[in-house]
Length: 278
Image (cartoon, rainbow, N blue to C red; front, side, top):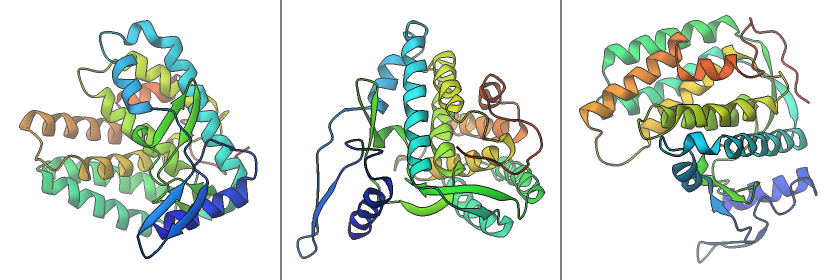
């Protein structure tokens, strides 16, 4: 709790009025009682809205809504990253693989096959090694930029739970967390691929071409492994395990729904060069 209190103080200092009322304001931290007091920002959970607006039955009726939500979320995140921009970070192949392997071990414990995970890791390692030392634009990271931590007041995003905040990280970290979560939703039969594709397309477009598909892919894979590994306490069914294996392999191989979203957006799929961030 203390770390989140400090994170929110730092964010308020760095962003000024840029994100007024879209992030909780830290009021006080009562250390002895273990109580963190924050301002109330209101809004409805994005996760609930996606269940109602992005499902396979109603998604086709809500494409405009998905477009507007995608724009709003991408706009909020680019504003947050622009206001907290930091010195660029050189990509560290070894550190990436250390975190990747920790997330990989969590998914292996759930029952996902070693063969599938080895294929995913080999592909991620090859991509990761190809841009060792390349500078990546950096900013503060929410650290857990997922629909359950995003509220909507109309179309205005509000973001909560900064417990995993990092003061300086590649801009891909939060982008990939959100994209990886939506990619996992899109692999479920009850969600509309088309509706979620519109959401991600317009989310990406707010970056105006400054994202590159190569680092985005490996950050998405790492995020997906983390989301799966820290998922429900109960073990997944055999059907769910096969679904998760298939979506991980497809993203690693470049044959997934995620790749179609990149083709239909402003994400560059060419070789990585020095990224720029507005």
